[in-house]
Length: 441
Image 1 (cartoon, rainbow, N blue to C red):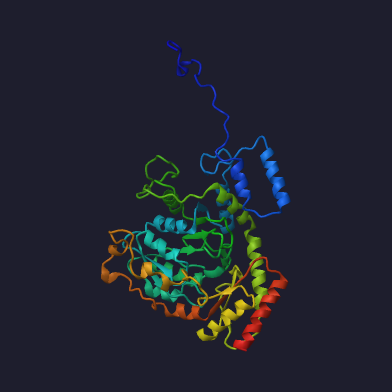
Image 2 (cartoon, rainbow, N blue to C red):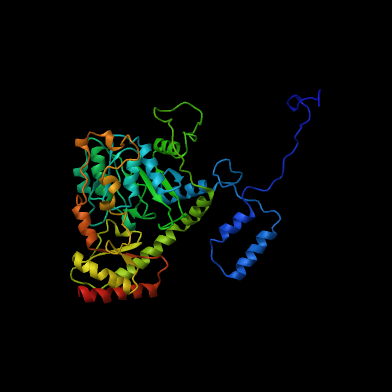
């Protein structure tokens, strides 16, 4: 070997070729993924035979970056931008991660306050704490979304964001909320976890506030198993969110360049979406309008067939045309009647729920959030609570949002499947009329 010319100087390579080798993810993994789908044993055997007999099978690259093929996550982000109508969109591994990214992109941290509703999944508030800020919990109104008047009363010198949650598929009263927010110069983060595809007065939810955060969890409207999206029209917020969601600001426009503005370079976390989730999300986004149309159609059929009963009312819809229709909310005259009618409806086969049928605590109502009500911390520094003088901390109690508790005590929530046809809608409305005739007829 002595005296041979180095390749860098024009000599021949010592290693002229490596591989080809099997891809990291191959036949076995594909079969496991396909096993998630249920089909006839005959077709399962046929597909398995095809896969096992394929000589040129090459597995996927499941990381969105450095991908030799077009990224499914990138395509899903593009489809989501088109659906929602924003300039920028970032995929994440959950709505929880999108919310943390939203708070951090706005620079929210120790000593800041964020206004959240008393009726929302716990993550809306928990992520405020994760960002070292203080959640200020306020009442909802008859829309079951944030009450603009309650927001106004809750604003302090520390308020850095307002987070309306479009609960159970219906838009919050966004005109009134935006009026309050703009009056005080406070950014709005829309939590659209439960209302993807909804709108308010012609504007898609997630495009009205400064930032929109979406969930693609399996139990939401459009799904990818797990997953989330962050939407905005603000390029700097988008860039900061990218930095936060992908460790150590790796994906700034100029990855190794100096900061364009102060506080654009910081240590982040890892909330990336995988290509598997991206592929499912992309297909679901393409179907979103049809899915929402199915929910709305079934919702209208059931609601219109319910008889008029004394004391029966429905959730106030801030914009009926913008409701996704995934849930029909009825309010009965009082809590006692509701407690009796709910199990009766379930016994008739109506897909419904309420606060009285939970076998486990309902993380959607604030009075179960002991982590926050008791000022719990993960570390000895006692953050976020130690970042504010004790006499300036919110006074949390289990009865501090009486309107929320009163409304939920009378609410029965009927789940609407977008596959419901006339037959299913007729059966459900007939069952509702049957039960309500007994209890409030």
